[in-house]
Image (cartoon, rainbow, N blue to C red; front, side, top):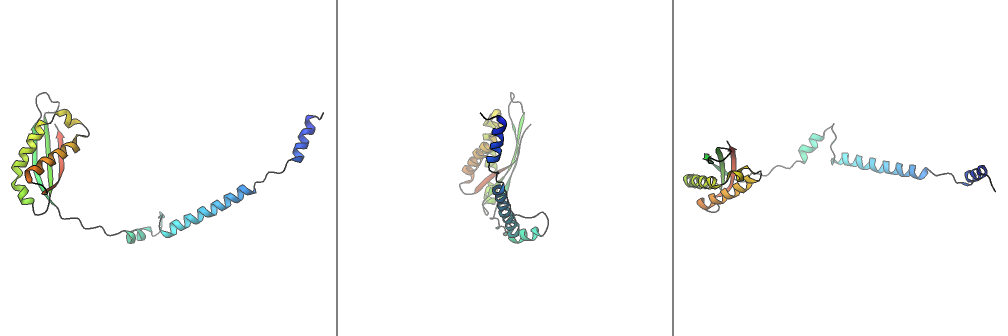
Amino acid sequence: MASAAQIEVETEEGAKPKGGGKGLLFGLVAMLVLGGAGFYATWSGMVALPIGGAAKHEAAARPKPKDLPPVAFVPIDEIVISLGPRAKARHLVFAAQLEVEPGYDDEVKLLMPRILDVLNTYLRAVEERDLEEPSALPKLRAQMLRRIAMVTGEGRVRDLLITRFLLK
């Protein structure tokens, strides 16, 4: 039987030396590829450097914005609505602007008393708990816009832009 010391010596002499060259070569190739890709990205302008003339390239590359379509706005007077005796908040303060098709703004202004009546009637019918929900404003806006479109006629009012919605 061989002793433990002899077995250790035989394994040390018989073992091949470990090769570290493949890992070093792979790391060197990866470094060169990533360095080249980084150079190309900055040279071509895909990545802007924090120093240098990147602002010149950005200004030249930015396309000119398109002209805005024609638009007209008609203000809706501020409406204060009582919420009732059992409500936590006593009043709802509402103000908005109507985005209308150009050329129809005078017609919409003539119908403003009817628009105010429709909005007052609708907002008085809404429960306070519905007004306090975080998702209530888009729903209320859609409902009010539909009612305004019924008063003014289809195609005259594009959007209802709420500028003030406050529970006091």
